[in-house]
Image 1 (cartoon, helix red, strand yellow):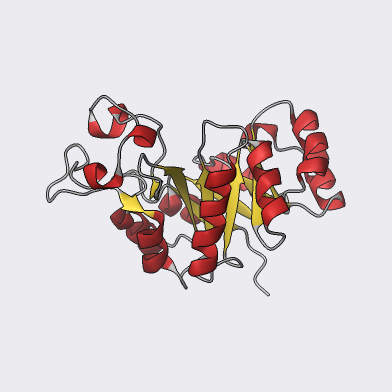
Image 2 (cartoon, one colour):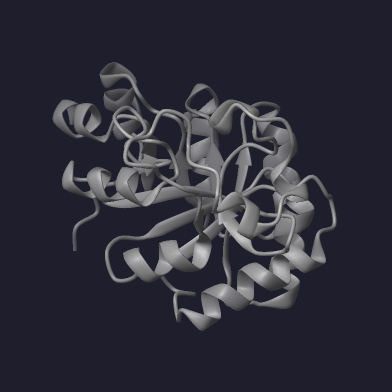
Length: 236
């Protein structure tokens, strides 16, 4: 069995394409990505869309917020500087395109601590696509992870953190995530041993430097999340 860590494209090939779009993920696969990481959040009409920010400013150069903008309005707004125009994708469209390719990590974005509706929608979409085994949901919000596990024991989850490691890993004994997603700066032998002791998978972010990739590869991690799949694969 191949035990090499997954090389997970962070928002796709965001160096050459618009992040979190189907072309960016298609090119990441061509570069050799063995996993995909996407950001998901609810838009104003309730659908789950593939998008990182809570506002429209950075990606569309417009005022307003994803959570207040209906999907039919978003579909009329092309990403800034794209020709031909590229538009925001729904999670359903993304899964339709990439089901059966590589493991997929959904980074769930919500401004609410206890977002039961968001959890229900995520679980429903994964069940509809029959992808509960090939997708896992990560989040900085431990309460969302607890809700997901409460609603579905089958769902796979990952706890994102980047500091105060001992606090997060201790709290996660309650959250019961399947994986930990530490920032590369907090990856230590202590953390690796603790993850192994508690049966946690380890996905390290965001590894963009060849030297750091080599350092991370000395630990038994399950995946590296990177903005540059081509560079990291070549360095390993």
